[in-house]
Image 1 (spheres, helix red, strand yellow):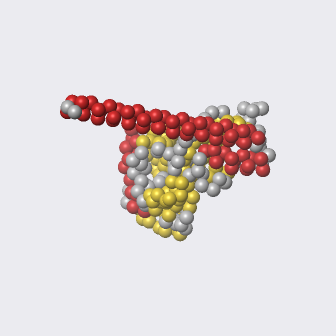
Image 2: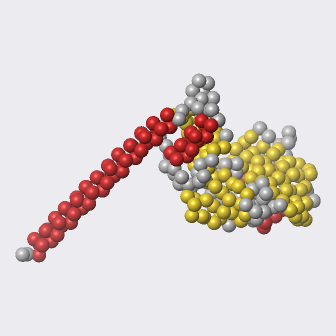
Image 3: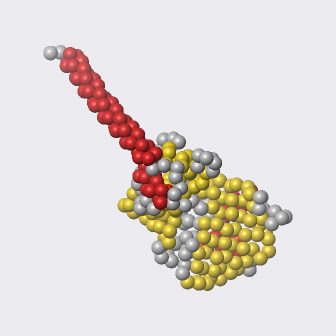
Length: 273
């Protein structure tokens, strides 16, 4: 057999093998699609029986539990960027006071890195560019993106991580003359995260847990308008905290159209209204 015929035969065999593998992949995907569709239909039936109705497709997302270590150096840097050199005083329980010539600051790891920095004399006038430069100097902007929002009494920096950490907002407060008077918010250090093996559960599982809790509270029937996976922090020790995955669920009551949010722990299934 000539070399050209052998080459042609090999090409033909490879093409047939690829067609066969493609057929297997299409068949497997079709079975998986049918399986998911059947599960979604069954889930909708069960939820409807419990008084909870879906207005759209369930999101497909997952997250790991994260542990965080405190960042004392970052806290001091944030305080001194606004107040100048500070004296530090440990108050116990994860609370630290910083006192400088221009004001004072409190960082509370007990409250999961909640902080407030108050100026004795307002600083300003403060514009958007000044606020952004100050936020970077104070190391309040994480490596993830953040957006600056103008508010009636100042500015707010809202972090935009791949998965939100609800409440992670820093507010720059202004007086009536547009001068900076205080900075308050919730600050997470960029480093010191430890990923744990514990994984979040699915949106469907979370809704089943929520349906049980809603029936106990006599709050059904309701429609699920939206779901989002993110993190809520919880304290462990004065030096460590934990970010736990939660599903934030937006519910709507059909009779009134009233909407409100609740959270479902994506690990334990506990619902918080």
